[in-house]
Amino acid sequence: MMKAWLWDGSAGIEHVKLSDAPVPEPQAGEVVLQVSHAALNPADLYLAEKRYPYPVHPPLPHVLGRDGVGTIIKVGDGVEDVVIGDRRIILRSDSGVFRWGTFAEQLSVPAECLAEIPEGWSDEEASCASLVYSAGYRALTMWEPLKPQSVVLVTGASGGVGVATVQLAAAMGHTVVALSRNKEKQKRLRSLGAALTFNPEDPRWQEELRDSLKSRGVDLAVDNIGGKLFPDVVAAMGEHGRISLVGELAGPVPNFDTGTLFSRRLRIGAMALGYLSPLETRKTWDELLKVITDSDARPQIDKVFMFEELHQAFERLTKGPMGKVLIRVKP
Ligand SMILES: NC(=O)c1ccc[n+]([C@@H]2O[C@H](COP(=O)([O-])OP(=O)(O)OC[C@H]3O[C@@H](n4cnc5c(N)ncnc54)[C@H](OP(=O)(O)O)[C@@H]3O)[C@@H](O)[C@H]2O)c1
Image (cartoon, rainbow, N blue to C red):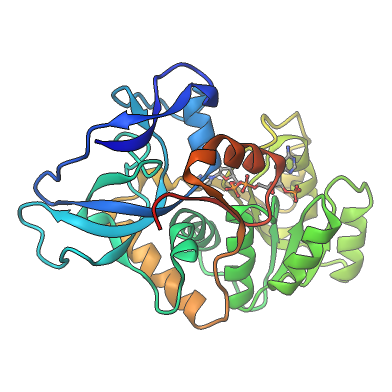
């Protein structure tokens, strides 16, 4: 038996409980990982609260957790390029969504969803990179390529996806504008590559942005927030600007004047990692890793909790972290 955080299917994270569970056996093409560290994502909460953006009904009980790193302890039939003892990252996959995830001592995962740990990265750094950097990279590259030194606006910039997007956009040579409601986090974001930072709750932020950009508008916005901030994002856009929708942390968007979309010929599109094939996921990872390793960017960790402290870790996530919140499962 192993220890795992089991969700019984009732709405609410309080229904995720530390329990005994059978150890997994690998199917053909899979390996079993002894999880060392796992990272939390808002998607885990959405699933437990039954407000995932699309219908997801995993068999119950279910284990949440989409991101993690671990050591291979069992190898299924037909898996050739890894051996017991190898350490691997789990790339975005069905883990934690349709099959048991990383909030457990062990999990079985298709070998095609694994990647090597980048040289010099700690287990902590490796455990929390896959989902957020993939989201940031896809949001930045889902349109035709940006011109050099474009202006990229990132909302919710202090969160997992936000920090990754700020780092990637800066490493690509763009002028990054990062929004955070917290002054200390704004400072950190500037040290991570943001050229300009603003508080989205300050009514003057758009005017100050236009002044700083000498009346130029934003070329690409990566929006993690939605809600009442979204009309302000639209208003900050320049001609032919593009908005990549990633998240909706602030909920539904209120009515806004669509006239700006016409007059500036704006485009809005949603980025959804959940529909990538394992091959597309790997290609995305390989491409973004090149951008990261050519710069000095590294995954940013907000706080590491013990395995038994999953609920405290979720509390921290909902309070607005600076980077990623992790649990140490079995170092
Ligand atoms: N589409 C996809 O495939 C995909 C993939 C990954 C993630 N996502 C989504 O992307 C979003 C961001 O994820 P994340 O991991 O970066 O989240 P996160 O780590 O929880 O951070 C989000 C940040 O946004 C800010 N924020 C939170 N609630 C807000 C509100 N109501 N109004 C304004 N700002 C708020 C906070 O920053 P400050 O306190 O500093 O302002 C917080 O640090 C989530 O909705 C997630 O589900 C989507």
